[in-house]
Amino acid sequence: MSAGAGSLRDWNPEQYLKFDRERNRAVCDLARRAREHLPGRPRIVDLGSGPGNSTAILAETFPGSDLTGLDASPTMLAAARAAHPELRFEAGDIRAWAEGTGADDELVFANSVLHWLPQPETLLPRLLGRVAPGGVFAFQVPANWEAPVYQLPRELAAAPRWREFFHARPVSDWQTHELSYFYDLLAPHAAAVELWETVYVYAWPGPETIVAWYEGSGLRPYLAALPDEAARQEFRAAYLEGLRQAHRPQPDGKLLFPFRRQFVMARR
Image (tube, rainbow, N blue to C red):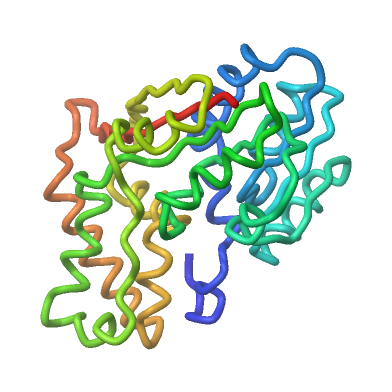
């Protein structure tokens, strides 16, 4: 993808959905587990609904439910409404929503979004507090913080060639924690907490595919910090070379790309 810095400051639905099949696997797994606890037609809010793929999966998993997708990105909301006109999407900030009153939603669902937000120690209990009694707070976050796909951009940003662009406005780290952290945070406020991890392994043609994957999410703020497209192309090339060194191909030429995700479900 070639994009100017202005467009990189918002999400790109097209780039994100190039890997909708891979991204949707975690959504389906979490939605199915939540369904085990919520028969019938619960009231649901999908926080950080993005281009609507997670909301559509929830609609299929919980047919007939009162379902709302909430997102702060205008481009993502526009894409979601265009792709799923039958569903309801609203503009809103997750932190502001967490500060709201009432506990009407029986499922508060958040797919791969909460790691972007600061102060999880206060945010996550507040989100659980907005779940109706007997309902579920379910979320999943990436847990690949030790993998090259996550570490290489940080190493590049700290290198002499690039550090001037990130010194004044460093890219925020994901809010990453072990599962025990989420348990200790939510257990005092929950009837029960379930936690698990899954490593999804993708067989891809080469490291260029990893760049395209990450360009739809975690690489975006790094590219947005750079002054022009020439610098962004150079940064991409350096990132690609790092991935090429870190991931060796299989005998058939494919590259195995493991991606670890954490899942949390807390019941009121």
